[in-house]
Length: 412
Image 1 (spheres, one colour):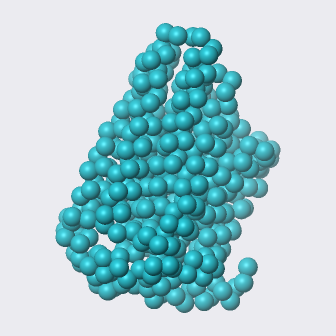
Image 2 (cartoon, one colour):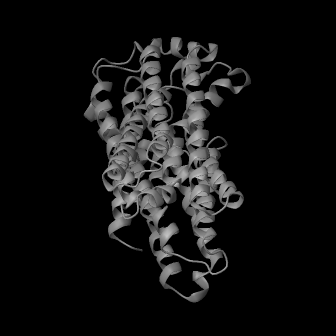
Image 3 (cartoon, rainbow, N blue to C red):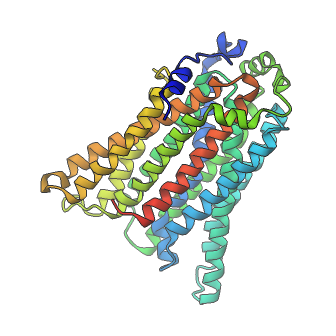
């Protein structure tokens, strides 16, 4: 890595700030912030609901490697949409109307994907014929693909829009995404503790995830239609020229080169995280004390830590993209640390070291992700900030795919 480039990036301090960002209008009662938070939560809640109910899908479709298939189907479809949006973004900057159309379409696709699972369970509940079970499983995988397509559409639109706004709105989005994991983990713990450990209890638990998730997603549809009707958002858009000052053909490759180090950083973050979480935490370590509660509690600890990390940027954002990128590279040290907890001395195999490392994994993931996504769009000219945010989202998606594959083929 070129240290000179890092210093140059650290010297960039708001060159692309709009008048709105420099003297942002007052967000009365933090309504715009709350809506961005809710939209961030809604954008990731369906995926968390699907993957948290993987035990239910494993029961319904044994021997299907559900977790691996879901990950590939979801992340590859999401990444494909983000890549397509890079091309579209050259000629179609995100305006108020374009934002609403994309978001409404994406959240409607979320609703469709979430209601398919309870509907299929009702339709096939008394039929155990292999052909019909195979058809039901194919339909479930199709619903995951739809969910991934919606995620790419919503994520690219939301990040691109927030890239041109004051930094607190990008921070709100990422705090919201982290909160969705906390909510789903809480639901899982409650249902596991309160419902009987039977097939019917498992189905009730899974359906609860989907009912709650669908209700939140429907609420998000209202939020995305309300957002640009708020006076604060109208003023921010007016100060930005309503999106009209965006270049009709942004300097795509120049933007990509300008943010190559933070893009590398976000890719590294999620390669490391997804190769450890949730697979390693759920499958490779055990606790005689906590038994089958151990992976659930570790995943909960991670999600809470990730939420705290993303919320910390609301208090302080490290100055300089270079410092944040070096922090991403430093997370590679988590590999030997977790490896020691798996293969090292007996005292390192106890619950305390693993929990501490999981907290470190979550906080560093949340904080560094939020910092890079806040600073990167501000390090390029305003006309390119939307493309910069989408480029970062694409590299984030690439990191998710790379980390998932690495987690399958390589054990710490």
